[in-house]
Amino acid sequence: MWIILQKITKNLIVAIPVMMVAGFVYGLFFDPVWLKSMIVPFTFLMVYPMMVTLKIKKVFEGGDGKAQLLTQLINFGIVPFVAYGFGLYFFSDKPYMALGLLLAGLVPTSGMTISWTGFAKGNMSAAVKMTVVGLIAGSILTPFFAKMLLGASIEINLYAVFKQIVFIVFFPMILGFMTQRFLVGRYGQEDFQKGLGPKFPSLSTLGVLGIVFVALALKAKTIASAPEVLLSILVPLLVLYFFNFTLSTLIGKSFLPRGDAIALVYGSVMRNLSIALAIAINAFGPQGSDAALVIAMAYIIQVQSAAWYVRFTDRIFGENTPAKVAYQS
Image 1: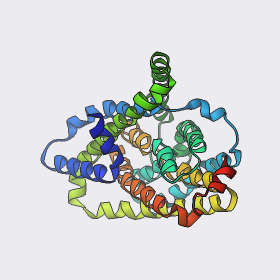
Image 2 (image 1 turned 30 degrees about the vertical axis):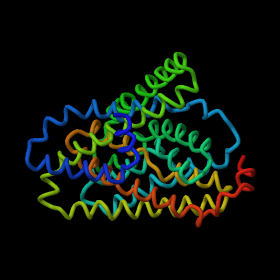
Image 3 (image 1 turned 60 degrees about the vertical axis):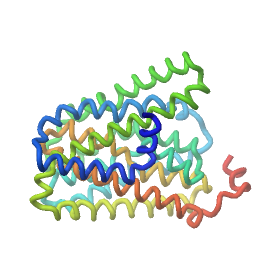
């Protein structure tokens, strides 16, 4: 079972589109309303396993202050406002799709931030710290950004959004940390890191695929009646990710050594779409399915673009020579 789950996790490029198609087909031929009852279990399954392996203590380690500062400046000072502007332009008459684009640009970093940084031979320690800081800060700031930027066009209940964030981020974070401490205490740090820890992200993948299936099933009839809606979603997402990759690459090359620059790119481009999707579906009722559709489509672009960026990393930042490794350490 674990081998199968790990293979699926490594092949999200294929798995997510397959589940989107499956959800679309199910929503066309069956009544998908009952699937709403699966949203909460899938949400928990999606978020809790990520928290079990989260290394919160990394936040207090130093050595990469400039990279951390630049990353969070991009994450909270630039990208949300650009996503908001693109939402106004591309979805001027679809405020909840604009919300989806905003949410896709609001909650930075996920476990994939660390994974892709590792694939590209970047600074893994910096990536872990970016993930923890971005996740916590993004969870706290998301309701305020959403209210400030879109509160005039859609009804945003701050309390409802906060309640969902507590349930889908901070409660699983506390429970995950307690689980981590229990497992480390029982089996030891080495066994946890090598044996038990790597299994948890695979469970998270099941939650992601389940939520994507539900999101597409709920919107299937709408998509079938107006298939051009998918193209109208893909275009702004492509523009947003292209802007984000370009900006982060330029800033990384200009101000940081190779390893930190790579961590900055993945720490500012990889968004926590799992949490964004959970917020959209759980906090905004039936209309949140429009936002969820945008975020579900973002999965495809994010995974594909991250994979391609790894292939061009050496061309962009130069090869990972021993001299550079020594400098980064």
